[in-house]
Length: 105
Ligand code: SF4
Image (cartoon, rainbow, N blue to C red; front, side, top):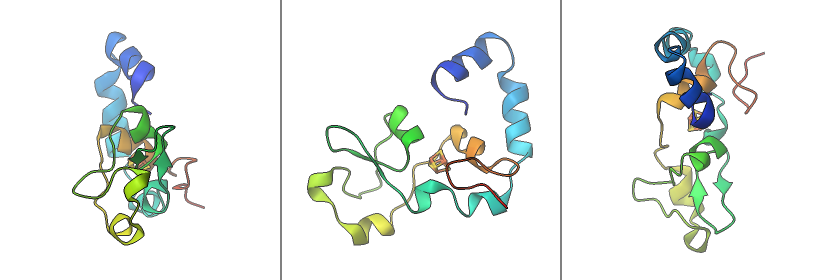
């Protein structure tokens, strides 16, 4: 997953472009169907909501007008929310998917 220390390593070692190209070229729509952000939320110790634990690591709270704190929890709004995505999402959708629930069988 190209985030945090591993992303730093990829950049510093000169492998970032090659790695991201491989992830992007390995995009699999079947793997994308079941990524965990489609049916799970991550909740931080202080009650903020995230689309997944990777987004939590990146401090990308649920957004797009949807309540982003447990005190304002609204299942209907959250079910229809737009998920915050980034380059790291290619780590969930490459090849057979990731162990977060998006893996294909
Ligand atoms: S990293 Fe992206 S695709 Fe994977 S679960 Fe999180 S938001 Fe969804």
